[in-house]
Length: 349
Ligand SMILES: Cc1ncc(C[n+]2csc(CCOP(=O)(O)OP(=O)(O)O)c2C)c(N)n1
Ligand SMILES: [Mg+2]
Image (cartoon, rainbow, N blue to C red; front, side, top):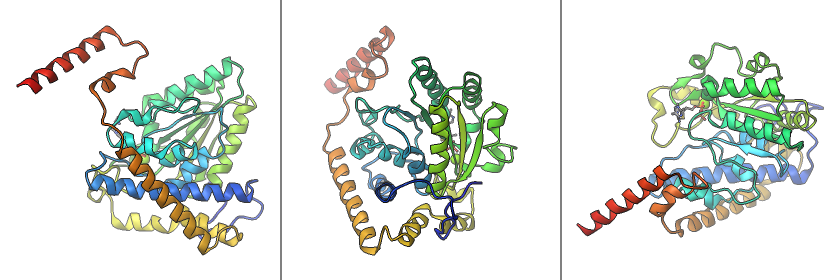
């Protein structure tokens, strides 16, 4: 398993990626913003101001390490646990919140941002990302496609079909599996009999690498190398980022029913944010005052995003139907008309 920073944040000699002070500080800001925005979302849900929410707590290194090395032309196919990935691509936090507040408009990606709306159906984004990568290849564009998913996704047919196709057609895909040890209540031990998830890549004829998913530099380095291979026509890579889901699956889940407190406690010292901060301090890039102002700026940005998301008008009935197809098929138009009729009748009663 590739590790660059150990649990104390000490760097392995000679293993540091080529990142300058400004880039390292930016990574830190993104990790802090992700942690802060995530904690706020959980509070909003408890206050009835947000719907069911999937927390990214503990996944900050996976998310920022994966998205940080992307170029603007690259595509991203994320899943529902990808807050930091979105933020690293400069997606507006107010939009992200707006979606989880129950309005699909929040996932309508701004024009020019090569980002697919995140997938809720587990693994469905994988074959889609392979299609996008094949399109880039056919158009002779040197763009790569990053696709993220959980350990549970690796048991879906879509995973095997997607990776098989990517291997055969040598598409410029980078697959990153956030192996957080759980798929709701299914533990990693029951997910697959393979020793690692990374080794599954060899069955499809391309490289797989396992990295410490709580070490942002390790994730960054592995994804950077995989992207460079993709740009150069070298085909796909599977990166397994070993991490842990510190929170419940979603706000609708109670993880105490299927896992022990000791297990969760054992992962807490491996916190990706604390580890990266220790590294930045040892390099003299962040001190207490700087860390405080990063946290304050994040808290401010989060409050602003909440206010913006909450000030938007609620979704209309038309919004429910308007955005799946470019031209609405007749059956959908009929359903839309019928729903509006029945709402009118209800209102008149
Ligand atoms: C096709 C499909 N089957 C089942 C579900 C219900 N479901 C939602 S999340 C999830 C587990 C996902 O686990 P994993 O891929 O490890 O991602 P994680 O939630 O751990 O980040 C399941 C089974 C779904 N959304 N889609
Ligand atoms: Mg999982």
